[in-house]
Image (tube, rainbow, N blue to C red; front, top):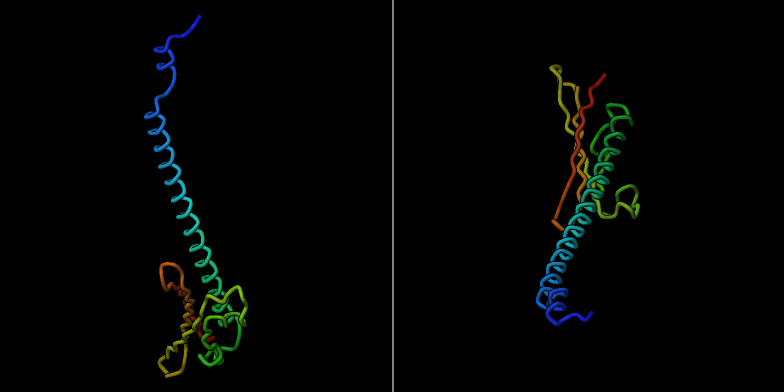
Length: 140
């Protein structure tokens, strides 16, 4: 049995229908690519924030568990510029780390409490970012 031209036209897609379907598919693929790019960018931001938090935490631990109370001074923990963090380790070249130590006096005028604040700074696609951690150390 032979098919008529009218039956062939009903069974297939027209050129316009095909073009509309291809356009919708292309829009979907582009949207998916944008989502993938945003996810990749956010993953990098999270990684940098995690590394910066680790660097700040490491410095806080060095201060808290390191020297005697009287040796916790600004001079013993100098600021580290970009490329100097962790002795110039290449993995941390994009980070800078600063330490601020503030003394609090007791009623007798002696230093009784030290507040240690560590700030790690880096630049990403959104500009300058930083992580800041603080800890208090009391004289025993």
